[in-house]
Length: 328
Image 1 (cartoon, rainbow, N blue to C red):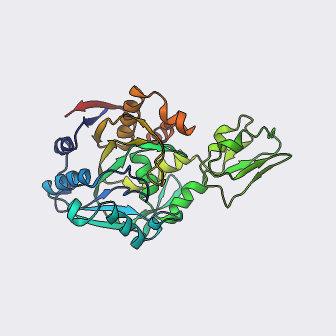
Image 2: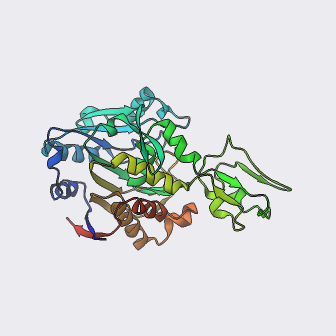
Image 3: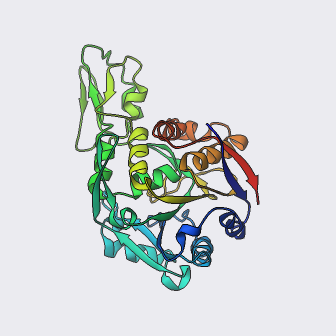
């Protein structure tokens, strides 16, 4: 597999130079969504509006018509409906005046099938020929870490597909193999499991992260269909197929918890700049390599989940994790 170039820069202004080194000719006269998580109330560790403005201005320089975009969430939150998310976005500084383009929140999607899994891709992403995916690199209690793949795999689809991705990794229990050791109980971040004389699950509470399956040493638990990492990769691929996509990962405020968590938790390592490339697996792999270079294994140690599983599954679907790093 040949390598793809991933550009690295310490300053937001360097993103403009990196984008100029990539082929953005297809942006001309096109509506270009800038896919971004605009932050959960209480969590300040999202990508700043000032950085978004740099990306938006670069798209305009290439002749494109950018708009800032995200989808409503499936869990109880002010961001679970369009008007609520618009209010949150504005409070966080994501206004037309600040970022230089419209801010659009999607609720509906178009059904596509990727790897035999039906996924509802957000209308605005489905209709786009090209896109920029701007992602904050951080930990994630269920997926190990969040980067470009997670940004698209969960954030690029409808509520129904968000739930589907999680439901596919719910645990199935084999009573004959279960030793009732209880190792799965502390692994569950949703407190959905109990083990005494028998194994029990509250499926209304289970969020389908699959961490109990990973914790089971007896082989008594398996995923209902696939791991969360595989589901995220499939969903992300459904969002980007047949499109020209540029990925920008921000390695700043690298917190323990996802931007969807109202509390970011502790900062896991120092700021490390920005990465820009044309393959989600390569940009995420480069992000993990940079973090591991100063804090080896910090995401896995903090979350109990291997963050590279997402990348591996994305590669199996046709993405490319081989990269060469170039400073700009």
